[in-house]
Length: 142
Image (tube, rainbow, N blue to C red):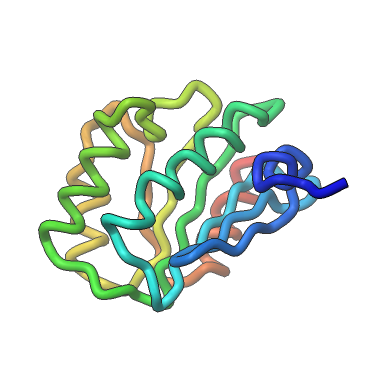
């Protein structure tokens, strides 16, 4: 029997797709996504958000969504606006999903960190310089 990506998501298996990876950390309410160097905003955004949507919908409790941008793809202002629009106001806006506890972005990029701070007050989001800092924050909230 061959498993689909949807089957793999439903059991928490890490999945590598063009441009990003996503996984449910074992025994923790954490979804961890990571951009890859070959990320393409137009090609990958909707696929990535559909995967996150499915994993959040399958979660049994409110979940932290960490996006690791340590490997920074080539992101311009248009890309930032495109992704933010889909996160907040898309067909299934991830940042308003009932199982999303908080959205955390890992980046040292000052523009991206400011973009997180500029999100509407109804969105719980934070930016961190390292993945270790983001994980420590999440674990201190449990």
